[in-house]
Length: 225
Image 1 (cartoon, rainbow, N blue to C red):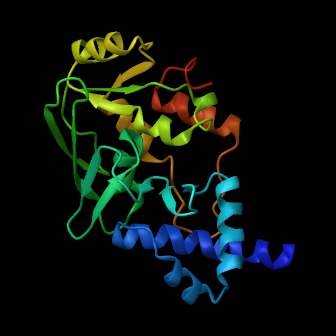
Image 2 (spheres, rainbow, N blue to C red; image 1 turned 60 degrees about the vertical axis):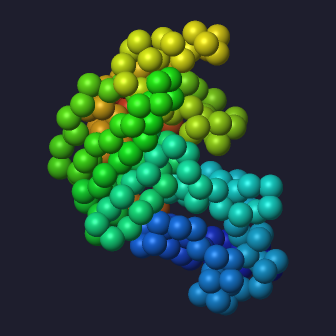
C-alpha cells in the first residue's frame, strides 16, 4: 500500500471501528473490516498500526483492538448496560462518557465494584444530569503520563465507596493518592470529551483545548496539566 492509499484508509477504518463498537458493544472482527473496506490483511494491519500511533485505538501484542476510547473489548472493571447494548467501559471516565456519545443509548446502568472493599456499586447515568451518589473516583496517573502505559492508566481509574476506601487502597500499595473527585465532576469530565468521535473527520483536541476543557469540568489543574 502506498502512503497516500494508507492515509485514505485511516478515516474509513477509524469510523468502521468506532461505529461497530457503538452499535454492538464489541470490537469488529478483522474479517468484517477487510470485507467492509475491501482491503488485504497486510493493508489492514498497516492502517490499524497508524491509528494506534495516533492514539485512536489501543492494540495488544497480536494487533487486536483492546480499546477505542471510550469503548473497550475486554473488561476494565466497568459494565455499561443500555436498553439494547452491553458495553465494556475502558475506565470510570470512559464508562460515564458512553451515554453522551452513543445516540441510541442516552441512559445506561453502569456497574463496578469498589477496589478496596469489593462492594457492588451501580448508577443510572444519563446524558441529562449527573447521577446521585457519594462515591469518589480516583485517577492514579497524571494526564501528562497517561499514554506511557495507557492500559495501566485505564485500569487505575476506579470508583471507590469513600475516602476511607481510597486511603486503605493506596496505603496497602504504598501509592500516592493521585487525584480524587466526586461523581458530578466525573460526569462533567465525560460529558463532551469524545464529542464527534463517531463522525467523519474527527480531530483530537490540542493540549491547550484539552486544558480549557478540564478547567471547565472542574478537575484539579495541576494533575491535568
